[in-house]
Length: 138
Image 1 (tube, rainbow, N blue to C red):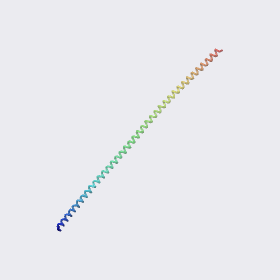
Image 2 (cartoon, rainbow, N blue to C red):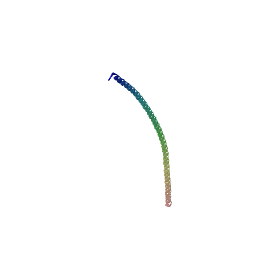
Image 3 (cartoon, rainbow, N blue to C red):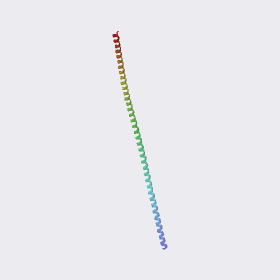
């Protein structure tokens, strides 16, 4: 191989190396740009996901608070209704007891009066019999 051929071969190798270097730099820049875009897309997606999660959490908290308030109101309402019903039932029970006491008291009074009347009649009958015995035995 001649010196001229060797020079041309070296020139070709240098040009190929320079071209490969340019292509490598171009590929590196494209890869860097692609990676930067991918990182940006990931960051955007991550922020959007965080926002959705935060929003969903806030909505869930609001629903929970609302349902808790609603449950408390229902419980208060049912408690109030139960208290009123218990008061009514207690009054009805007290009135029934008072009515039964009055009935029993009246029966006792009637029985006592009947007993007194019978005893008075018996006393009158006994006195009348004793009088008749005393009158007829004279």
